[in-house]
Length: 269
Image (cartoon, rainbow, N blue to C red):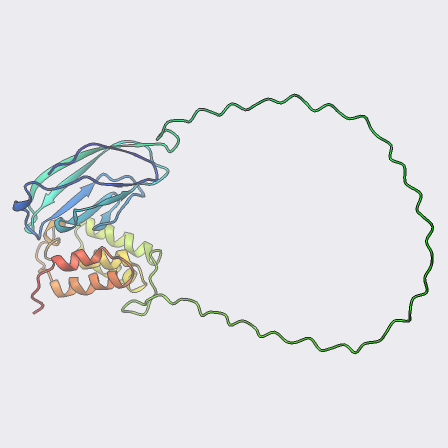
């Protein structure tokens, strides 16, 4: 696994240069676990399973974009583990990432010298004298004419366009990445501790409330490609259930769920 060093500006979206070599030896069901991302960073591929930890299917490694937070600077080490479908780590790599502040990312431009103008001398005050108004000759005016007022034409009220409606999820909730955040975090804590059954309950609550990340992580707990890597023992994967929740995540606005669906076994029986 080849991962060079990288320097980027805080708040910038940069390409994450990670690739697996040789390409001919890649197993389609393998995936890469990314660890050490700064808090608040996101990837446009895969999904997050813990703070700073993301899982990416090996087929989705092309054009991985890392969105850095604006409030994190410094040097950190990001690790990459290539994991096969049976949970074996077949290759490892690392990336030294340096995040620089926004002001220090580029050369400071020299300040353009400003031309100094001499002060404008104060003008001596001038006393203006009012001119004598010419005599006015009064001209008799005709009496005002009375005209019937015409009723003002009523302008039609422009039609207000109907607000755009968001697609609803399988359970009738609109996409909302802020819904069920407590349940999502609780599920991640339980999953990290190995209690996958309880974690699924919390993921499902958040997903049914419209949280697309919860639907994606819930699908991964059934996915044969990622389930073994989560350390699950005594439970069989369910590709159909994984597909159902991946499709729900895509319906709720996560296009990266499509790559997870494509990597699932094609047999739906």
